[in-house]
Image (tube, rainbow, N blue to C red; front, side):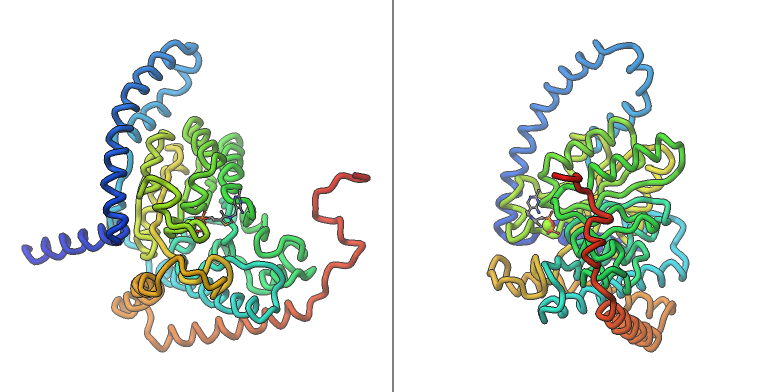
Length: 415
Ligand SMILES: Cc1ncc(C[n+]2csc(CCOP(=O)(O)OP(=O)(O)O)c2C)c(N)n1
Ligand SMILES: [Mg+2]
């Protein structure tokens, strides 16, 4: 019993470390942030009471309409954010679910590694923002979704599509600009989408996805179905006005939407501490009036549980959640090696790789007897074969013809 307590205490401490950036710099910044946060709490208390007066003045109709939303918002303000508890759910996932999440992660990793190499060999036009390192986030979230649920992605979108059920052939064809691609070769890496899978699109506009996901959630609420929409965005995007507007409206209308911030510590080449004064993006949730939750984005089970709770809340009318997943991208902002900028150290990258989501989950699957090393290797080899076939298929596919140039795109005739 005492040993078990010790173990949980040690686990908690480890989880805390993961959630917090461990450099000295960030510790100093954190305490400064705390002071700022303390100041702003005082301020917000004053502001809140003023806001209450304004709310009281508003029409009877709106007061009657929103009591439930008010309760959720009040709750969210009281408990601005929580750190997701591991093993919080009683119902452990089935072996089939564990296997499915592992498969998603491995498919993303291998797709991205191969796509990155092709780009660096000059075989893919344009830039590729690769998702390697962040696989646990897409996989843990998407495990709860069906094709009827919508997602919006980012410029780093291949992983989201693979996890949503995207197939390698039309994905590579899209990256190669071929007419057999998901968008007939006109979307490319940064605008790949597929409505049948509920993937509303990657997006070259940082912060462009959340308003679209919020709108999709509004349509679901309007239609009265139980579908949800998920907005994936980065720590950098979390500073964009479009994200704040979408979150504000989603909370106001209690929309079935989950805002998933993939905090990988950088916006392009800028460390988080240089682009925002907070450490936890989830802290902003209270400002929107929704629950904020932090989870270990390098642990697919932690993401699965935290996302499951948020998605269930959204489906059952409880409104949106801001879920922050602490994660890391192994490759550069663009491509594998990028531009050779020294904005982060090799030691930092290696330290995150030690927490690799796929390695640790495979160890767990073996320990649990869900899969053997042999089965895992066979699966990996099969994915490799599927990839090569898809690359061949994409290379053999034709480009769109000039007469198809204006199909599938918005344009103003005669302009
Ligand atoms: C509106 C807009 N501003 C700036 C850019 C340039 N840009 C591309 S990616 C990026 C960083 C985004 O950082 P984050 O949201 O943390 O995503 P990550 O790249 O870390 O996945 C920026 C600033 C853009 N594409 N769109
Ligand atoms: Mg980022």
